[in-house]
Image (cartoon, rainbow, N blue to C red; front, side, top):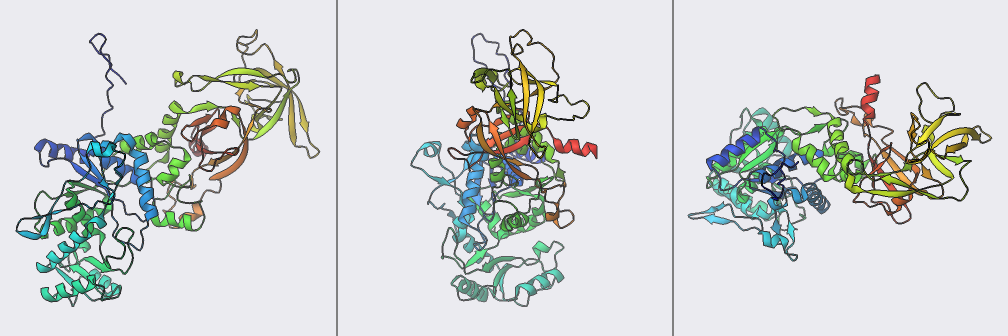
Length: 608
Protein backbone atom coordinates (compact mmCIF):
# COMPACT_ATOMS: atom_id res chain seq x y z
CA UNK A 1 0.00 0.00 0.00
CA UNK A 2 1.28 3.50 -0.83
CA UNK A 3 -0.05 6.91 0.16
CA UNK A 4 -0.11 9.89 -2.24
CA UNK A 5 2.83 12.22 -1.81
CA UNK A 6 1.80 15.90 -1.82
CA UNK A 7 5.07 17.05 -3.41
CA UNK A 8 5.05 17.06 -7.21
CA UNK A 9 7.40 14.52 -8.83
CA UNK A 10 8.41 13.18 -5.40
CA UNK A 11 8.69 9.38 -5.07
CA UNK A 12 5.81 7.51 -3.49
CA UNK A 13 6.87 6.20 -0.09
CA UNK A 14 5.51 2.72 0.77
CA UNK A 15 3.90 2.42 4.18
CA UNK A 16 4.87 -0.70 6.12
CA UNK A 17 2.01 -2.59 7.76
CA UNK A 18 1.81 -2.06 11.53
CA UNK A 19 3.70 -4.50 13.73
CA UNK A 20 1.62 -6.81 15.93
CA UNK A 21 0.77 -5.69 19.44
CA UNK A 22 0.95 -8.00 22.45
CA UNK A 23 2.02 -8.09 26.09
CA UNK A 24 5.66 -9.01 25.33
CA UNK A 25 6.06 -6.18 22.84
CA UNK A 26 4.49 -3.81 25.38
CA UNK A 27 7.16 -4.86 27.90
CA UNK A 28 9.97 -4.37 25.38
CA UNK A 29 8.57 -0.99 24.31
CA UNK A 30 8.55 0.15 27.95
CA UNK A 31 12.17 -0.96 28.42
CA UNK A 32 13.22 0.88 25.26
CA UNK A 33 11.54 4.09 26.42
CA UNK A 34 13.21 3.74 29.84
CA UNK A 35 16.62 3.08 28.20
CA UNK A 36 16.90 0.01 30.42
CA UNK A 37 19.32 -1.74 28.03
CA UNK A 38 21.85 -0.43 25.49
CA UNK A 39 19.89 -2.37 22.85
CA UNK A 40 17.23 -5.04 22.67
CA UNK A 41 18.84 -8.47 22.31
CA UNK A 42 16.72 -11.62 21.86
CA UNK A 43 17.62 -15.16 20.84
CA UNK A 44 16.11 -18.20 19.18
CA UNK A 45 17.67 -21.22 20.94
CA UNK A 46 16.57 -24.57 19.43
CA UNK A 47 17.99 -27.85 20.67
CA UNK A 48 19.55 -29.62 17.65
CA UNK A 49 17.82 -32.94 18.35
CA UNK A 50 15.16 -32.76 15.64
CA UNK A 51 13.78 -30.68 12.82
CA UNK A 52 12.02 -27.38 13.42
CA UNK A 53 8.24 -27.39 13.10
CA UNK A 54 5.57 -24.75 12.63
CA UNK A 55 5.47 -24.09 16.37
CA UNK A 56 9.09 -22.96 16.14
CA UNK A 57 8.09 -20.64 13.29
CA UNK A 58 5.99 -18.67 15.77
CA UNK A 59 8.96 -18.33 18.12
CA UNK A 60 11.33 -17.43 15.28
CA UNK A 61 9.03 -14.67 14.03
CA UNK A 62 8.44 -13.37 17.55
CA UNK A 63 12.11 -13.19 18.52
CA UNK A 64 13.41 -11.90 15.20
CA UNK A 65 10.34 -9.69 14.84
CA UNK A 66 10.98 -7.94 18.15
CA UNK A 67 14.64 -7.39 17.24
CA UNK A 68 13.53 -6.02 13.87
CA UNK A 69 10.87 -3.70 15.32
CA UNK A 70 13.01 -2.27 18.13
CA UNK A 71 16.36 -1.94 16.35
CA UNK A 72 17.95 -4.87 18.18
CA UNK A 73 19.63 -8.18 17.38
CA UNK A 74 18.39 -11.77 17.64
CA UNK A 75 20.98 -14.52 18.04
CA UNK A 76 20.49 -17.92 16.48
CA UNK A 77 21.95 -20.29 19.07
CA UNK A 78 22.02 -24.06 19.28
CA UNK A 79 21.39 -25.24 22.84
CA UNK A 80 23.59 -28.27 22.33
CA UNK A 81 24.04 -29.63 25.85
CA UNK A 82 23.09 -33.27 25.22
CA UNK A 83 25.49 -34.91 22.72
CA UNK A 84 23.73 -38.29 22.80
CA UNK A 85 20.57 -36.87 21.20
CA UNK A 86 22.03 -34.24 18.89
CA UNK A 87 23.40 -34.43 15.38
CA UNK A 88 25.01 -32.11 12.84
CA UNK A 89 22.13 -33.02 10.48
CA UNK A 90 19.75 -31.19 12.78
CA UNK A 91 22.10 -28.21 13.11
CA UNK A 92 22.24 -27.83 9.33
CA UNK A 93 18.50 -28.26 8.90
CA UNK A 94 17.78 -25.63 11.57
CA UNK A 95 20.11 -23.14 9.87
CA UNK A 96 18.45 -23.78 6.51
CA UNK A 97 14.95 -23.39 7.96
CA UNK A 98 15.71 -20.15 9.78
CA UNK A 99 17.48 -18.64 6.76
CA UNK A 100 14.55 -19.60 4.52
CA UNK A 101 11.87 -18.30 6.87
CA UNK A 102 13.28 -14.90 7.79
CA UNK A 103 15.50 -14.33 4.73
CA UNK A 104 16.01 -10.67 3.95
CA UNK A 105 13.07 -9.86 6.28
CA UNK A 106 15.34 -9.82 9.32
CA UNK A 107 18.81 -10.56 7.95
CA UNK A 108 20.25 -7.32 9.32
CA UNK A 109 19.00 -8.32 12.78
CA UNK A 110 20.35 -11.87 12.76
CA UNK A 111 23.13 -12.43 15.28
CA UNK A 112 25.70 -14.96 14.04
CA UNK A 113 29.40 -15.58 14.57
CA UNK A 114 32.28 -16.12 12.18
CA UNK A 115 32.83 -19.78 11.42
CA UNK A 116 35.44 -21.32 13.69
CA UNK A 117 35.79 -18.18 15.80
CA UNK A 118 34.89 -18.83 19.43
CA UNK A 119 33.33 -15.89 21.29
CA UNK A 120 35.54 -14.57 24.05
CA UNK A 121 34.21 -13.31 27.38
CA UNK A 122 35.96 -10.84 29.64
CA UNK A 123 36.30 -11.46 33.35
CA UNK A 124 35.02 -8.87 35.78
CA UNK A 125 37.81 -7.01 37.57
CA UNK A 126 38.46 -8.58 40.93
CA UNK A 127 36.14 -11.52 40.24
CA UNK A 128 37.99 -13.92 38.00
CA UNK A 129 35.21 -16.52 38.18
CA UNK A 130 32.63 -14.24 36.55
CA UNK A 131 32.29 -12.88 33.07
CA UNK A 132 30.96 -9.78 31.39
CA UNK A 133 28.81 -10.26 28.30
CA UNK A 134 30.92 -9.66 25.19
CA UNK A 135 29.68 -7.96 22.04
CA UNK A 136 28.74 -10.50 19.41
CA UNK A 137 27.74 -10.44 15.75
CA UNK A 138 29.54 -9.17 12.72
CA UNK A 139 29.61 -5.83 11.01
CA UNK A 140 27.56 -5.16 7.89
CA UNK A 141 30.76 -5.14 5.84
CA UNK A 142 31.75 -8.55 7.20
CA UNK A 143 28.29 -9.93 6.41
CA UNK A 144 28.59 -8.88 2.79
CA UNK A 145 32.18 -10.07 2.38
CA UNK A 146 32.18 -13.31 0.43
CA UNK A 147 35.06 -14.79 2.45
CA UNK A 148 33.25 -14.47 5.78
CA UNK A 149 31.29 -17.61 6.63
CA UNK A 150 28.73 -17.10 9.37
CA UNK A 151 27.23 -19.72 11.64
CA UNK A 152 25.03 -19.90 14.73
CA UNK A 153 26.25 -19.53 18.27
CA UNK A 154 26.34 -22.70 20.35
CA UNK A 155 25.88 -23.27 24.06
CA UNK A 156 29.01 -25.42 23.65
CA UNK A 157 30.92 -22.20 22.78
CA UNK A 158 30.65 -21.41 26.49
CA UNK A 159 31.36 -24.80 28.10
CA UNK A 160 34.60 -23.46 29.64
CA UNK A 161 32.80 -20.45 31.15
CA UNK A 162 29.81 -22.53 32.26
CA UNK A 163 32.15 -24.97 34.00
CA UNK A 164 33.78 -22.06 35.85
CA UNK A 165 30.35 -20.78 36.86
CA UNK A 166 29.60 -24.22 38.35
CA UNK A 167 32.90 -24.11 40.27
CA UNK A 168 31.92 -20.66 41.56
CA UNK A 169 28.62 -22.06 42.89
CA UNK A 170 30.50 -24.84 44.68
CA UNK A 171 32.86 -22.32 46.30
CA UNK A 172 29.85 -20.35 47.51
CA UNK A 173 28.40 -23.51 49.07
CA UNK A 174 25.50 -23.45 46.62
CA UNK A 175 26.23 -26.66 44.72
CA UNK A 176 27.26 -30.17 45.71
CA UNK A 177 28.23 -33.48 44.10
CA UNK A 178 25.59 -36.15 44.66
CA UNK A 179 26.17 -39.92 44.42
CA UNK A 180 22.55 -41.07 44.42
CA UNK A 181 21.22 -43.06 41.46
CA UNK A 182 18.88 -41.28 39.02
CA UNK A 183 15.88 -43.17 40.46
CA UNK A 184 16.84 -42.27 44.01
CA UNK A 185 17.30 -38.64 43.04
CA UNK A 186 13.88 -38.48 41.41
CA UNK A 187 12.26 -40.11 44.43
CA UNK A 188 13.96 -37.82 46.96
CA UNK A 189 13.04 -34.73 44.95
CA UNK A 190 9.43 -35.91 44.64
CA UNK A 191 9.24 -36.38 48.42
CA UNK A 192 11.15 -33.18 49.20
CA UNK A 193 13.95 -35.07 51.03
CA UNK A 194 17.53 -33.93 51.26
CA UNK A 195 20.28 -35.95 49.60
CA UNK A 196 22.63 -37.65 52.12
CA UNK A 197 25.48 -35.97 50.20
CA UNK A 198 24.05 -32.45 50.47
CA UNK A 199 26.38 -31.35 53.26
CA UNK A 200 29.68 -32.37 51.71
CA UNK A 201 32.39 -29.80 52.26
CA UNK A 202 33.36 -27.28 49.61
CA UNK A 203 36.77 -28.92 49.32
CA UNK A 204 35.33 -32.40 48.75
CA UNK A 205 32.83 -31.10 46.19
CA UNK A 206 35.57 -29.25 44.29
CA UNK A 207 37.72 -32.38 44.26
CA UNK A 208 34.90 -34.65 43.07
CA UNK A 209 33.73 -32.19 40.42
CA UNK A 210 37.27 -31.88 39.07
CA UNK A 211 37.55 -35.66 38.94
CA UNK A 212 34.17 -35.84 37.16
CA UNK A 213 35.58 -33.48 34.53
CA UNK A 214 38.73 -35.58 34.26
CA UNK A 215 36.70 -38.67 33.40
CA UNK A 216 37.34 -40.74 36.55
CA UNK A 217 33.72 -41.85 37.04
CA UNK A 218 31.29 -43.79 34.81
CA UNK A 219 28.09 -42.29 33.43
CA UNK A 220 25.30 -41.89 35.97
CA UNK A 221 27.43 -42.38 39.07
CA UNK A 222 27.64 -38.74 40.11
CA UNK A 223 25.96 -35.44 39.28
CA UNK A 224 26.40 -31.85 40.37
CA UNK A 225 23.28 -30.38 41.96
CA UNK A 226 22.35 -26.85 42.97
CA UNK A 227 21.70 -26.44 46.71
CA UNK A 228 18.46 -24.48 46.90
CA UNK A 229 15.40 -25.72 48.88
CA UNK A 230 14.80 -29.47 49.18
CA UNK A 231 11.05 -29.14 49.78
CA UNK A 232 10.28 -26.04 47.71
CA UNK A 233 6.68 -25.84 46.37
CA UNK A 234 8.22 -25.47 42.91
CA UNK A 235 9.87 -28.82 42.20
CA UNK A 236 12.41 -27.18 39.87
CA UNK A 237 13.97 -25.56 42.96
CA UNK A 238 14.38 -28.86 44.80
CA UNK A 239 18.16 -29.11 44.44
CA UNK A 240 18.06 -29.55 40.64
CA UNK A 241 20.78 -31.25 38.61
CA UNK A 242 23.10 -28.84 36.85
CA UNK A 243 25.83 -31.18 35.52
CA UNK A 244 25.93 -34.87 34.61
CA UNK A 245 28.54 -37.33 33.36
CA UNK A 246 28.25 -38.39 29.70
CA UNK A 247 31.22 -40.07 28.05
CA UNK A 248 30.08 -39.10 24.57
CA UNK A 249 31.60 -37.22 21.63
CA UNK A 250 30.02 -33.85 20.98
CA UNK A 251 29.33 -32.65 17.43
CA UNK A 252 31.11 -29.36 18.17
CA UNK A 253 33.62 -30.03 20.96
CA UNK A 254 34.55 -33.62 20.14
CA UNK A 255 35.97 -35.59 23.08
CA UNK A 256 37.03 -32.53 25.11
CA UNK A 257 34.28 -32.97 27.69
CA UNK A 258 32.80 -35.93 29.51
CA UNK A 259 30.54 -33.82 31.71
CA UNK A 260 27.80 -31.64 30.26
CA UNK A 261 25.63 -28.92 31.81
CA UNK A 262 21.89 -29.42 32.07
CA UNK A 263 19.70 -27.29 29.85
CA UNK A 264 18.42 -25.04 32.65
CA UNK A 265 21.94 -24.26 33.83
CA UNK A 266 23.46 -23.66 30.41
CA UNK A 267 20.51 -21.73 29.02
CA UNK A 268 20.44 -18.79 31.42
CA UNK A 269 24.24 -18.51 31.43
CA UNK A 270 24.42 -18.57 27.64
CA UNK A 271 21.83 -15.78 27.63
CA UNK A 272 23.97 -13.80 30.06
CA UNK A 273 27.23 -14.33 28.20
CA UNK A 274 25.66 -13.22 24.92
CA UNK A 275 24.10 -10.15 26.49
CA UNK A 276 20.51 -11.27 25.88
CA UNK A 277 18.01 -8.83 27.37
CA UNK A 278 14.70 -10.62 26.74
CA UNK A 279 14.77 -14.41 26.95
CA UNK A 280 11.43 -15.36 25.42
CA UNK A 281 10.24 -18.94 26.02
CA UNK A 282 7.05 -20.92 25.68
CA UNK A 283 4.68 -21.23 28.62
CA UNK A 284 5.92 -24.60 29.91
CA UNK A 285 9.13 -22.86 31.00
CA UNK A 286 7.26 -20.51 33.35
CA UNK A 287 7.94 -22.84 36.31
CA UNK A 288 11.63 -22.85 35.35
CA UNK A 289 11.93 -19.06 35.64
CA UNK A 290 12.68 -19.03 39.42
CA UNK A 291 15.61 -21.38 38.75
CA UNK A 292 16.76 -19.19 35.83
CA UNK A 293 16.79 -16.17 38.15
CA UNK A 294 18.34 -18.07 41.10
CA UNK A 295 21.35 -19.20 39.07
CA UNK A 296 22.11 -15.71 37.75
CA UNK A 297 21.54 -13.97 41.08
CA UNK A 298 23.51 -16.56 43.10
CA UNK A 299 26.56 -15.92 40.94
CA UNK A 300 26.35 -12.18 41.71
CA UNK A 301 26.86 -11.35 38.06
CA UNK A 302 27.32 -7.85 36.77
CA UNK A 303 24.12 -6.17 35.70
CA UNK A 304 22.00 -6.01 33.65
CA UNK A 305 20.80 -9.59 33.80
CA UNK A 306 18.57 -11.18 31.17
CA UNK A 307 14.97 -11.81 32.13
CA UNK A 308 12.71 -14.63 30.97
CA UNK A 309 9.23 -14.05 29.52
CA UNK A 310 6.77 -16.77 28.55
CA UNK A 311 4.05 -17.01 25.91
CA UNK A 312 1.65 -19.72 24.78
CA UNK A 313 3.12 -22.09 22.23
CA UNK A 314 1.40 -22.73 18.92
CA UNK A 315 -0.81 -25.81 18.82
CA UNK A 316 -2.25 -26.39 15.37
CA UNK A 317 -5.24 -28.55 14.55
CA UNK A 318 -4.97 -31.78 12.52
CA UNK A 319 -1.34 -32.38 13.40
CA UNK A 320 1.04 -33.19 16.26
CA UNK A 321 3.96 -31.05 17.43
CA UNK A 322 5.78 -33.36 19.83
CA UNK A 323 9.30 -34.16 18.58
CA UNK A 324 8.91 -37.64 20.01
CA UNK A 325 5.73 -38.27 18.04
CA UNK A 326 7.10 -36.73 14.87
CA UNK A 327 10.17 -38.93 15.18
CA UNK A 328 7.87 -41.91 15.64
CA UNK A 329 6.16 -41.11 12.34
CA UNK A 330 9.55 -40.97 10.64
CA UNK A 331 11.06 -44.05 12.31
CA UNK A 332 7.99 -46.19 11.60
CA UNK A 333 7.94 -45.09 7.94
CA UNK A 334 4.46 -43.62 8.30
CA UNK A 335 5.82 -40.64 6.37
CA UNK A 336 8.76 -40.47 3.97
CA UNK A 337 10.98 -38.44 6.28
CA UNK A 338 11.26 -35.22 8.26
CA UNK A 339 10.65 -33.20 5.09
CA UNK A 340 7.59 -35.16 4.01
CA UNK A 341 5.14 -32.48 2.78
CA UNK A 342 2.50 -33.77 5.19
CA UNK A 343 4.70 -33.11 8.21
CA UNK A 344 4.35 -29.87 10.22
CA UNK A 345 8.12 -29.40 10.01
CA UNK A 346 9.32 -26.21 8.35
CA UNK A 347 11.25 -28.29 5.81
CA UNK A 348 8.10 -30.30 5.04
CA UNK A 349 5.99 -27.17 4.71
CA UNK A 350 8.61 -25.66 2.41
CA UNK A 351 8.74 -28.79 0.26
CA UNK A 352 4.96 -28.76 -0.03
CA UNK A 353 5.21 -25.37 -1.72
CA UNK A 354 4.23 -22.95 1.04
CA UNK A 355 6.23 -19.75 0.63
CA UNK A 356 8.28 -18.15 3.39
CA UNK A 357 6.06 -15.07 3.13
CA UNK A 358 2.87 -17.06 3.74
CA UNK A 359 4.26 -18.95 6.73
CA UNK A 360 5.85 -15.81 8.13
CA UNK A 361 2.64 -13.78 7.79
CA UNK A 362 0.78 -16.53 9.61
CA UNK A 363 3.36 -16.99 12.39
CA UNK A 364 4.10 -13.28 12.78
CA UNK A 365 0.46 -12.26 13.13
CA UNK A 366 -1.05 -15.29 14.89
CA UNK A 367 -1.13 -13.51 18.24
CA UNK A 368 0.96 -13.80 21.42
CA UNK A 369 -0.94 -14.70 24.59
CA UNK A 370 -0.47 -16.37 27.98
CA UNK A 371 -3.21 -18.92 27.32
CA UNK A 372 -2.80 -22.28 25.58
CA UNK A 373 -5.26 -23.27 22.90
CA UNK A 374 -5.51 -24.97 19.52
CA UNK A 375 -5.33 -22.79 16.42
CA UNK A 376 -7.65 -23.92 13.65
CA UNK A 377 -5.55 -25.14 10.73
CA UNK A 378 -7.90 -23.26 8.40
CA UNK A 379 -6.24 -20.03 9.61
CA UNK A 380 -2.92 -21.26 8.21
CA UNK A 381 -4.59 -22.55 5.05
CA UNK A 382 -6.25 -19.18 4.48
CA UNK A 383 -2.85 -17.45 4.73
CA UNK A 384 -1.41 -19.91 2.20
CA UNK A 385 -4.29 -19.47 -0.28
CA UNK A 386 -4.18 -15.69 0.04
CA UNK A 387 -0.45 -15.67 -0.72
CA UNK A 388 -0.60 -18.16 -3.60
CA UNK A 389 -3.58 -16.53 -5.26
CA UNK A 390 -1.48 -13.40 -5.79
CA UNK A 391 1.70 -15.10 -6.97
CA UNK A 392 0.83 -18.46 -8.59
CA UNK A 393 1.14 -18.81 -12.36
CA UNK A 394 -2.05 -20.26 -13.86
CA UNK A 395 -1.60 -23.41 -15.90
CA UNK A 396 -3.83 -26.10 -17.41
CA UNK A 397 -3.43 -29.67 -16.19
CA UNK A 398 -5.74 -32.67 -16.21
CA UNK A 399 -5.27 -35.00 -13.26
CA UNK A 400 -7.60 -37.86 -14.29
CA UNK A 401 -7.74 -37.63 -18.05
CA UNK A 402 -10.39 -38.84 -20.47
CA UNK A 403 -9.89 -38.25 -24.19
CA UNK A 404 -12.22 -36.03 -26.18
CA UNK A 405 -12.23 -36.07 -30.01
CA UNK A 406 -13.69 -32.98 -31.68
CA UNK A 407 -15.06 -34.59 -34.81
CA UNK A 408 -15.64 -31.35 -36.72
CA UNK A 409 -12.24 -29.84 -35.95
CA UNK A 410 -9.67 -30.23 -38.78
CA UNK A 411 -7.21 -33.08 -38.35
CA UNK A 412 -3.61 -31.92 -37.97
CA UNK A 413 -4.57 -28.33 -37.23
CA UNK A 414 -2.82 -26.65 -34.27
CA UNK A 415 -4.21 -23.40 -32.99
CA UNK A 416 -2.37 -21.11 -30.56
CA UNK A 417 -4.78 -19.68 -27.99
CA UNK A 418 -4.13 -16.83 -25.58
CA UNK A 419 -4.13 -17.59 -21.84
CA UNK A 420 -3.44 -15.29 -18.89
CA UNK A 421 -0.79 -16.14 -16.31
CA UNK A 422 -2.43 -14.56 -13.26
CA UNK A 423 -5.59 -12.43 -13.25
CA UNK A 424 -4.59 -11.06 -9.83
CA UNK A 425 -1.32 -9.74 -11.24
CA UNK A 426 -1.73 -8.04 -14.63
CA UNK A 427 2.00 -7.54 -15.14
CA UNK A 428 2.48 -11.33 -15.15
CA UNK A 429 1.37 -11.28 -18.79
CA UNK A 430 0.13 -14.23 -20.78
CA UNK A 431 1.17 -17.24 -22.80
CA UNK A 432 0.12 -19.35 -25.81
CA UNK A 433 -1.42 -22.79 -25.39
CA UNK A 434 -1.92 -25.24 -28.28
CA UNK A 435 -5.39 -26.46 -29.24
CA UNK A 436 -5.99 -29.53 -31.41
CA UNK A 437 -8.66 -31.99 -32.54
CA UNK A 438 -7.91 -34.37 -29.63
CA UNK A 439 -7.83 -33.08 -26.09
CA UNK A 440 -7.99 -34.39 -22.52
CA UNK A 441 -10.52 -33.26 -19.95
CA UNK A 442 -11.06 -34.28 -16.32
CA UNK A 443 -12.98 -37.53 -15.95
CA UNK A 444 -15.04 -35.86 -13.20
CA UNK A 445 -16.14 -33.18 -15.66
CA UNK A 446 -18.29 -35.73 -17.52
CA UNK A 447 -21.29 -37.60 -16.16
CA UNK A 448 -23.23 -40.06 -18.26
CA UNK A 449 -26.14 -39.88 -15.81
CA UNK A 450 -25.63 -36.50 -14.17
CA UNK A 451 -27.20 -35.38 -10.90
CA UNK A 452 -29.41 -32.26 -10.80
CA UNK A 453 -27.62 -28.94 -11.35
CA UNK A 454 -24.65 -30.62 -13.01
CA UNK A 455 -23.34 -27.90 -15.34
CA UNK A 456 -20.42 -29.73 -16.86
CA UNK A 457 -20.34 -32.13 -19.81
CA UNK A 458 -23.04 -34.76 -20.31
CA UNK A 459 -24.53 -36.61 -23.28
CA UNK A 460 -26.16 -34.01 -25.52
CA UNK A 461 -24.96 -31.24 -23.23
CA UNK A 462 -22.66 -28.30 -23.89
CA UNK A 463 -19.78 -26.81 -21.96
CA UNK A 464 -17.18 -24.14 -22.64
CA UNK A 465 -13.50 -25.05 -22.83
CA UNK A 466 -11.45 -22.43 -20.96
CA UNK A 467 -9.80 -20.03 -23.45
CA UNK A 468 -11.28 -22.05 -26.36
CA UNK A 469 -14.63 -23.20 -27.75
CA UNK A 470 -18.03 -24.40 -26.68
CA UNK A 471 -18.32 -28.14 -27.27
CA UNK A 472 -21.26 -30.56 -27.30
CA UNK A 473 -21.07 -34.26 -26.39
CA UNK A 474 -22.45 -36.37 -29.24
CA UNK A 475 -21.25 -39.91 -28.46
CA UNK A 476 -19.78 -41.92 -25.57
CA UNK A 477 -17.27 -44.67 -26.48
CA UNK A 478 -16.83 -47.60 -24.09
CA UNK A 479 -14.63 -50.69 -23.93
CA UNK A 480 -15.83 -54.29 -23.62
CA UNK A 481 -16.11 -53.91 -19.82
CA UNK A 482 -18.34 -50.87 -20.14
CA UNK A 483 -15.70 -48.34 -19.12
CA UNK A 484 -15.78 -44.97 -20.88
CA UNK A 485 -12.64 -44.58 -23.01
CA UNK A 486 -13.46 -41.62 -25.23
CA UNK A 487 -15.99 -38.89 -25.85
CA UNK A 488 -16.95 -37.75 -29.35
CA UNK A 489 -17.91 -34.09 -29.41
CA UNK A 490 -18.46 -31.23 -31.83
CA UNK A 491 -17.12 -27.72 -31.35
CA UNK A 492 -18.96 -24.49 -32.08
CA UNK A 493 -16.16 -23.04 -34.17
CA UNK A 494 -17.63 -19.54 -33.95
CA UNK A 495 -17.69 -19.54 -30.15
CA UNK A 496 -14.07 -18.69 -29.57
CA UNK A 497 -13.38 -15.22 -28.23
CA UNK A 498 -14.24 -12.78 -31.02
CA UNK A 499 -16.33 -15.34 -32.92
CA UNK A 500 -19.94 -14.92 -34.05
CA UNK A 501 -21.37 -16.88 -31.11
CA UNK A 502 -18.67 -16.07 -28.53
CA UNK A 503 -21.25 -14.43 -26.28
CA UNK A 504 -23.55 -17.46 -26.14
CA UNK A 505 -24.29 -18.18 -22.48
CA UNK A 506 -23.10 -21.55 -21.20
CA UNK A 507 -23.25 -22.33 -17.48
CA UNK A 508 -20.24 -24.64 -17.31
CA UNK A 509 -16.57 -23.98 -18.10
CA UNK A 510 -13.95 -26.72 -17.85
CA UNK A 511 -10.21 -26.98 -18.41
CA UNK A 512 -8.35 -29.20 -20.88
CA UNK A 513 -4.99 -29.89 -22.53
CA UNK A 514 -4.08 -30.79 -26.09
CA UNK A 515 -3.50 -34.55 -26.33
CA UNK A 516 -0.74 -34.16 -28.91
CA UNK A 517 1.17 -31.62 -26.81
CA UNK A 518 0.43 -32.89 -23.29
CA UNK A 519 3.35 -33.39 -20.92
CA UNK A 520 3.21 -36.31 -18.50
CA UNK A 521 3.74 -35.57 -14.81
CA UNK A 522 3.66 -37.44 -11.54
CA UNK A 523 1.35 -35.50 -9.24
CA UNK A 524 1.28 -36.05 -5.49
CA UNK A 525 -2.00 -35.00 -3.94
CA UNK A 526 -1.23 -34.18 -0.31
CA UNK A 527 -3.92 -33.60 2.31
CA UNK A 528 -4.09 -33.22 6.08
CA UNK A 529 -2.12 -35.91 7.88
CA UNK A 530 -4.81 -36.60 10.48
CA UNK A 531 -8.59 -36.89 10.33
CA UNK A 532 -9.36 -35.10 13.62
CA UNK A 533 -8.38 -31.67 14.95
CA UNK A 534 -6.67 -33.03 18.09
CA UNK A 535 -5.21 -36.43 17.14
CA UNK A 536 -3.29 -36.96 20.39
CA UNK A 537 -6.14 -35.93 22.72
CA UNK A 538 -6.95 -39.58 23.46
CA UNK A 539 -3.39 -40.90 23.58
CA UNK A 540 -3.23 -43.11 20.48
CA UNK A 541 -2.56 -40.41 17.89
CA UNK A 542 -1.64 -42.86 15.09
CA UNK A 543 -5.15 -44.29 14.85
CA UNK A 544 -6.28 -40.92 13.48
CA UNK A 545 -3.83 -40.95 10.55
CA UNK A 546 -5.59 -39.97 7.34
CA UNK A 547 -5.39 -42.92 4.89
CA UNK A 548 -5.98 -40.45 2.04
CA UNK A 549 -3.29 -37.95 3.03
CA UNK A 550 -1.34 -38.85 -0.11
CA UNK A 551 -2.52 -40.02 -3.52
CA UNK A 552 -0.06 -40.32 -6.42
CA UNK A 553 -1.48 -40.00 -9.94
CA UNK A 554 -0.28 -39.52 -13.51
CA UNK A 555 -1.48 -36.26 -15.04
CA UNK A 556 -1.45 -34.54 -18.42
CA UNK A 557 -0.13 -30.97 -18.39
CA UNK A 558 0.11 -28.11 -20.85
CA UNK A 559 3.54 -28.01 -22.57
CA UNK A 560 4.77 -24.82 -20.84
CA UNK A 561 5.14 -26.86 -17.63
CA UNK A 562 8.13 -28.64 -19.17
CA UNK A 563 10.02 -25.52 -18.08
CA UNK A 564 8.53 -25.50 -14.57
CA UNK A 565 10.78 -24.07 -11.86
CA UNK A 566 11.00 -24.97 -8.19
CA UNK A 567 11.05 -21.24 -7.45
CA UNK A 568 7.63 -20.72 -9.01
CA UNK A 569 4.19 -21.59 -7.68
CA UNK A 570 1.44 -22.80 -9.98
CA UNK A 571 -2.31 -22.93 -9.88
CA UNK A 572 -3.64 -25.80 -11.96
CA UNK A 573 -6.83 -24.04 -12.95
CA UNK A 574 -9.99 -25.21 -11.21
CA UNK A 575 -7.95 -27.71 -9.17
CA UNK A 576 -5.37 -26.56 -6.64
CA UNK A 577 -1.99 -24.92 -6.08
CA UNK A 578 1.13 -26.93 -6.91
CA UNK A 579 4.90 -26.74 -6.74
CA UNK A 580 7.71 -28.70 -8.38
CA UNK A 581 9.12 -31.32 -6.02
CA UNK A 582 12.78 -32.03 -5.25
CA UNK A 583 12.39 -35.42 -6.95
CA UNK A 584 11.67 -33.87 -10.34
CA UNK A 585 14.36 -34.24 -13.00
CA UNK A 586 14.62 -33.66 -16.74
CA UNK A 587 12.01 -35.81 -18.46
CA UNK A 588 10.23 -36.63 -15.20
CA UNK A 589 8.06 -33.87 -13.73
CA UNK A 590 6.88 -34.27 -10.14
CA UNK A 591 4.39 -31.81 -8.64
CA UNK A 592 3.20 -31.55 -5.06
CA UNK A 593 -0.23 -30.24 -4.26
CA UNK A 594 0.29 -27.41 -1.80
CA UNK A 595 -3.36 -26.76 -1.05
CA UNK A 596 -6.77 -26.99 -2.69
CA UNK A 597 -8.50 -23.87 -4.02
CA UNK A 598 -11.26 -24.14 -1.42
CA UNK A 599 -11.55 -25.65 2.04
CA UNK A 600 -13.12 -29.03 1.30
CA UNK A 601 -12.84 -30.03 4.97
CA UNK A 602 -15.09 -27.17 6.05
CA UNK A 603 -17.62 -28.16 3.39
CA UNK A 604 -17.65 -31.75 4.66
CA UNK A 605 -17.99 -30.54 8.25
CA UNK A 606 -21.06 -28.52 7.27
CA UNK A 607 -22.59 -31.66 5.79
CA UNK A 608 -22.05 -33.38 9.15
